[in-house]
Length: 104
Image (cartoon, rainbow, N blue to C red; front, side, top):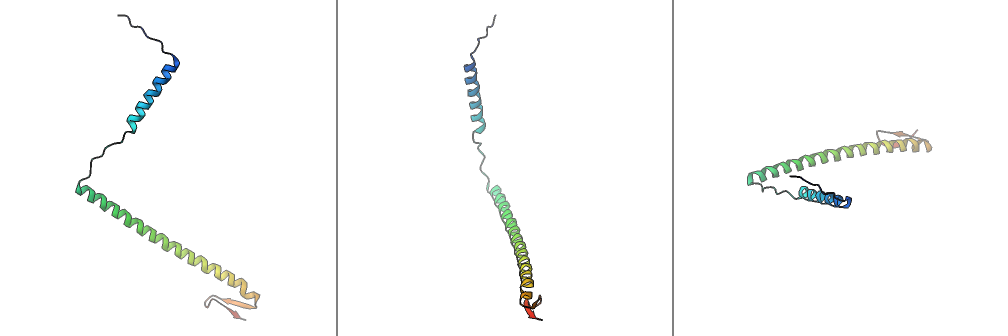
């Protein structure tokens, strides 16, 4: 038996390649169907998400507290620096303990 091959033209090969890519892409992108979770599995997932929410809340509280402390410290430093510059203009000295300008 003698087999013969047919010569395909270039546009036909491009169309075939495009059709193949579209078919494969469609097959790959089809949505998967997961089974529904049992009551026990749903409880485990809920527990996990509750723990994550609690951890996130604690992290946010720690971060907020740290930012508040940093802001307060920076504000106090800037206030002291301003007063150290302002008090001498009026012939006074700045007292850190009372946060006031004192007459010399």
